[in-house]
Image 1 (cartoon, rainbow, N blue to C red):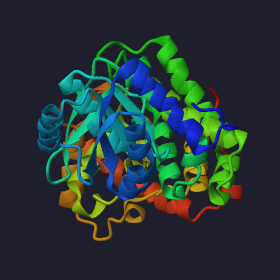
Image 2: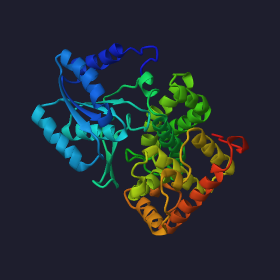
Image 3: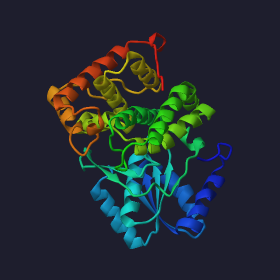
Image 4: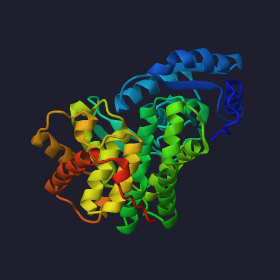
Length: 372
């Protein structure tokens, strides 16, 4: 993570210019969010070209799919690119990582929002062409370089930061299930005590820093609390979920991808609701639930499916969500028992009602507890 005192664009550019030219490559294939194209073209591309580094800028504005990756592979090979840069959000970074994996070349990740833990993980989440979850692509290595600039991330929309909190908030609860039940983590080994400890630390940092961090985001000002949350959401959540494993919360997120009404939702927003479903299945203590609710309310995360944008409740559709969440190779098997589809469906309905109840309850009336 960059030192927050070094905010000048020239310094930030020079960091990865040196990395690319001296250590990694000299012919860059940039996968870039559509909304950032003009900015990257004006600053990043010009800087690289001025340093005699070849650049191809590939606009990304869709899902991370096999078809999209294969198209990029063809373009990259024709250009002879020897390093991939991913600049943008979670799906852009996942696409860049997958591209680099298939092409056996280094990858540099530059997140422009703290919206997921995708920057540091050796994993890409693939989707179908119509936006439904396809599979997890496990990668043999983490990204070669991850560059995080707090001055860039604090300027991103608040909703993106909140999504990162939602994604990271699941890390502890899912790793707890994996550790207690001898589950399998994201690198296909058993969860270790160190991995579980990292997940605990991720949760503690979020619990302790979320209030002031959200103040920082609202006024676009960097604070120690904001930087602590960045470390939790980008780094600890990434290696914590990788080493600790995932469980129900991410399975529910993937199940929700079958609902067309929710295709606009951010990953962490759906994971956040998935946490509530998992806590219902675990029959977690009220104090634990209320600390999660406290963090979600402070972060302005949706508490119900209606909050997410699902307005016309249809039992058959929610049953399909439960069925999809329970399909292999998803992560429900890391839970304490094998749940039937109907049990998951009932938990979704109950979690939704729980969210409605807490929408009516103020922060001062919560009694949060998070003994670790």
